[in-house]
Length: 314
Image 1: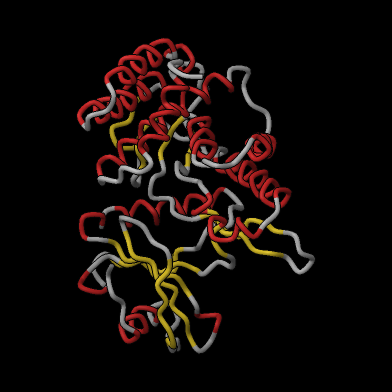
Image 2: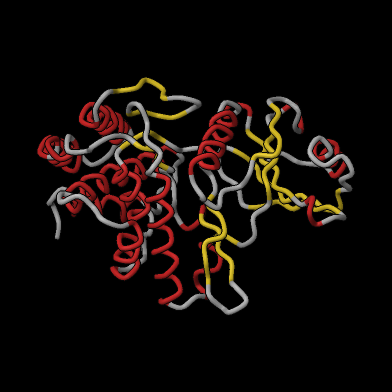
């Protein structure tokens, strides 16, 4: 965690609001790559979010700024506005980005207090939000920074590369040999599916309940009030993005999944098969991540899902 003092916060914030007077700095939920604070001021209009990046992830700042500005230019996504960014002006010389403060809390924090119909409606809105982002076409397939890193011209080449990376990581990290062999076969069988993608689009690539802010209207209805954390964005098949949101809704049921797809809108004829293949990709990605940080508890459940997806279990 990177500490942020009131005086530091006020100095930085005054580059946006010269008269800002900071009254409080509150640690918000962050991640492995950054520390996030809510910075409050005497004038609530000056309340903002500070995102401070770990040194090794300093380069991610440029990416997030670029993606947020791209979304703002082309969609009505409720994403935070970038108010200020500095590569070395944050605490300890770290990169810091100042974002507008959106109302609401992460869906992951409030979902247990919502009924099934309310959660289902929010998943429908998540689907619609993804569909809007996917109207932003990209020139090639690959990882996004402020452009496409190591671009590839077609989805078949891109997914072959990505599956190759994830499967090698799985093998190197000691994953089950039978799962590995069955997955290699399943990926080969699915090569024709990934070739069906019509073109790459901007994909959030991490739109799960922790990255969806929700708020309640005066009438009691819940709505998405913000979509955050775009640091994993890629240029890819839109169904790859939809599959990740579906896969990361672990613990949800068919109602939420159906609502997500309904909110998204019309899908290609091969959508069910392509989504299943992409779920396999995301399962390996998640298993590799948890194993790499020595978090053993989720691994058995993910391995069981992989077994089901490759036909080794019902």
